[in-house]
Image (tube, rainbow, N blue to C red; front, top):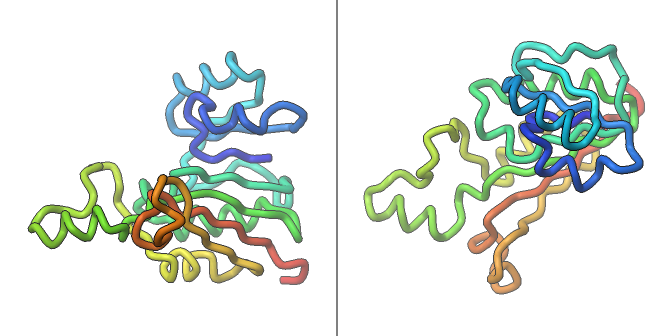
Length: 168
């Protein structure tokens, strides 16, 4: 497994045991803590520039809460596609930027996001378009106690899963 933007391994810890995991991040100190905490291999890399792995190296690539921070998420997704083996899965999450809370902030004349590191806002359609070179793309809404009432408006997060096609 390849964990992009792994930081100190907060998400990685849930699937590290029993799997061969490589964590990638641009923060060397965070990578060191992930390596020490979880015993995983870590690599410094800028996911928008390149991923220092051979084609088809991974069965799974995880990008939890990463894509919204990138200036060029399309470049990162292209690198993910290259390092995934055919049939491999790309999974991750992005904030639900168009949830009701953010819409109300916008209607009140404030930015919909208060995190200045979020460079991208994703609707399900935009997320599907970003993953357009993949097959079996699924986008779902999650996280939040009111999700069962209206997932699109009340979920905090969109989770996605996509498969690299077997044939180019």
